[in-house]
Image 1: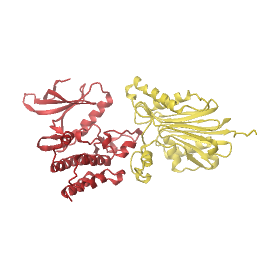
Image 2: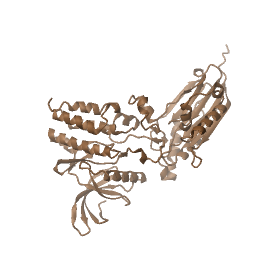
Image 3: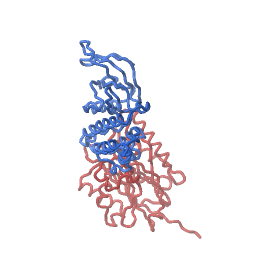
Image 4: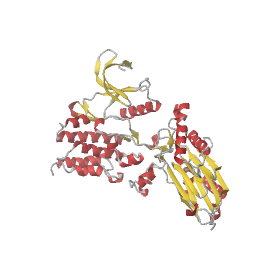
Length: 251
Length: 251
């Protein structure tokens, strides 16, 4: 359903539907202030009306956590309406995503290196906020102008802060995300930690195929070790090793 | 022929200002044996107390065929009955429970288990755990992803990877143990505990042999210990002593 909407001091004009998923859909919109001046072009993610309260809660969590992350390598949320019949939020409009770039196969070694640094900075920031992303993969890395890449889709985000959980109750774990990027502890027991995001980052390096820098394989091996305690403890440590491997290209 | 000699039972909420989410079945004569059980509603989801009660109510109606319970079919029936809770109230759609039961037949114990309640049997002056906890920690240890010592500081001890719930895959355990593997005489002692009870048994797994051999003494001793240290969760015990006649060789 394409719609025109007024929210607070803004007017939203829907131009087209640009994506569809299990959660709902994404629209290309124009945002205006009430005086009619155009603020810019954006994307709006809209939740399907038939999804139940649990999905509305998850959607609200996605918005809350993503909006609290203000970083150049994280897709920013500008506006939201969580009380609407179909909750929505407005974010930057991307030119494409990393998966599409990889499929086209035109990225140079230096471009790939820069992209990885941007993703790592984004994920390190997410961890510094006490969150886990839990769904790091190429199509959740969006491309913007000036070749800036940003981490997006906080649909599976988790707060690591135990205080955020009101009481320690028995609960049931479940594996979420995309199988290829899932660490063994996620597949077997639905156990998430910073090391599960680090595992996914290791596979994402592999996707970029940096064979020109053989040292990169050591970083992949360490970040995708079977035992979480054998992986990097922090994304910053992994980035440090990755930078050394990239600089030592050909060695 | 199996006879029930004695029984000790308790089931209390953690605090008296809340519902007890555990349910239990005292030894019930079914066919030529006795069925007993403990179910522990999964506290993180609405309807936990209802789910555990459904598990016990359905189990109590089970029939023994050929001296055995159809464990798989029993679990499937309970799961579908729990799924119906969400028709009554949408907030119960994740309602979940564990269930551990034992059918003391003529020649041995048949056990059905899903979740983290435990069955122990007495061997001399020790209790031997027969069931394996379906917890995240146990799974991670079994898969060689963490060592037990490494998990002590990590959360997840209260996280299950399976339970009886509408949206969770059933991963149940069925065990059969002949009495001849447990004891050389004609008595067997069996104990089913929810995690709130065995937490305190595990702290110091010792009682005098006279206490261990008498289900009502065991129940009162463990109950006193839990009250002394303050309950950490709802806590339930069903303990029973059976006598059976060893097979007589008529030749």
